[in-house]
Length: 358
Image 1 (cartoon, rainbow, N blue to C red):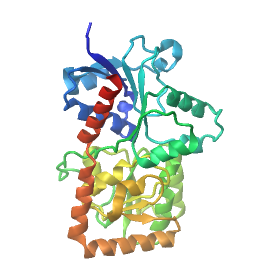
Image 2: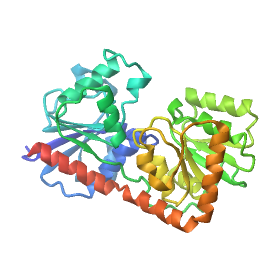
Image 3: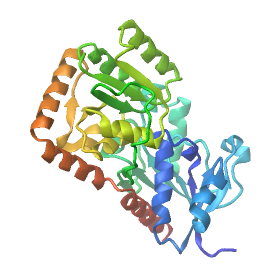
Image 4: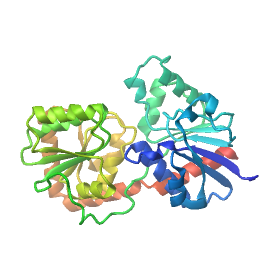
């Protein structure tokens, strides 16, 4: 029997690296692996634990996640000294009492499903809050949003920014694009969900005939059909292109070669793609909503509304400014991207584990 304190990381979302939560889980684990936690035993949860063990070896203990574990009767039997619920939506909870760290990415569900506090999702989240020994947030906005909507218990709270998922610049010279790149293009990537607000940039593209727009992500969802219909209705089939899900090589190819990165999301707990684009020194154009000004800082360009003429004006003015100050902005963009570091974030989480378990 190990005398080490045990920490369970509820990381089953790691199966889907194409999402922000999947990226968070993977990068946090990768960051932790490089740290000294000899006095702790870290347990990971995943649908395919063998893949994690193949990559991370004996650094961690591994548990196989099955969907029925979400039900109270089938919760894991093991008792852990600390349970880290790595996102606020996880339905898997500890069977018996342990110290509990809750990481909150956003509480957008409060607006999306119902503001009725008796709604199931609000009740489940409130239960998580009330059992928390400590809470971490991925942005100041996520913290503010939580306090605006919920009664937060008087426990230690920390804001820990996510790191930049691009730790290595790949050789993309062999990448073959499935969509045209023979004309200057704007790029964006993310889940095809309504809050990503892709309709706004597609409407703007009617006024931007000298450029194409390329969007990557899982467009087989309901909102994907909305986007496909909008492209068709506006006759933009030869100007707006959907790649579907993309490899890391493909993502870096489009970010490296685009004229600018566009991210008009109206609700974002953090926003990893703009950081990735900044790694390439690209001008980024973001909505000024929720957490995005925290991410983009002073060198990014912002839309405060989504009128197509206004968006076009902001975009063209921003591109002019970029061309006139290219060296400075490229340098500042790359510097800002590098300031978001998963090793730093992982070290902050590890310190909180140790503080809770003292």
